[in-house]
Image (tube, rainbow, N blue to C red):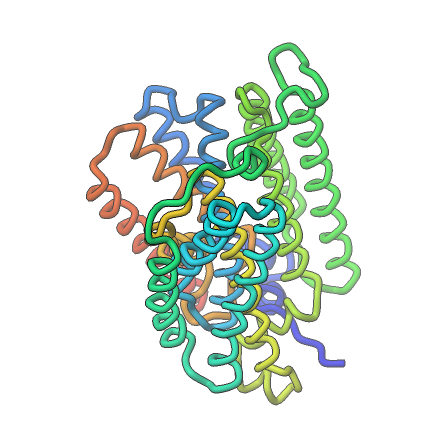
Length: 404
């Protein structure tokens, strides 16, 4: 059995023993601090409208596609690739689902299954060229961006709408009133928030104890305590705002939460996850150590196709219609979220949690600028500057760490 370690784990073995865990965690803390600062800035600039309960749920509903795509894109980037086709794949799969439901009257749940299968097939197509033929992912997905945008235009010549209410509720419904209310707060949302906080504390302490037993360096306990308190406050505030909203916990947030939990576990606790880090960290070494790099790369793109299909379901449900123009610039949002969240341009480094925080930063920027009525052209300029500054800051930190 081949044993590999993530670059983060390798980094954690360097430096003075007591504070050696601090350096690798600073990037994550910095990203989290940036998210808090951006939220506070827009809360002030929008006169307190950003964090109104209904706006918080809208933030999740409108940006669920970025959260879903960022998870898959993070895995692709960590392995040293890029995927430029995700927006077009979202449009193509959304078109398939829309046509099946509107033109053929297919049951929405069957249409969803077909959509997921189509996404997997598209991912297999692109994974074949990358993994088994050796065409660079940049070229394959650039071609895919054109191919699947064309497929979307052919499929959805005109807008398809009038879908089943069950399908529309995926992105527009919530659990408000499912188990009653505590004052004006939805009880079920409060329960989920409390369980989430307990799970976070338990998993963090368990992971720290496991790393300590294995002889790996762990972050200082005072710093860990500060982090847990900070995350508990953030989750608690989010739970409070969502529980006060008209929808309560949105269904789409449940879907996104399950995806985050599943993929964070996959990347941090499975052989497949370690192989992805190994391939991105040093491809030649990964091959010499016996990792089947072709197989890993192929399944990475299949996975990306399935997540694109899931994003297509969420987007089509949210809009209530399938259009050929869906998914415009989605690949840019997903890629930006990963790099803002600390993924390395050269591959091998990046965490699901970082990509999620990066996606939330993009979402807050989108919503905050929209509430302020900033012209879309200026929104592109601002988001582009944030991306460049985030990556530049990350590179400066790495260079300073390497120098010291």
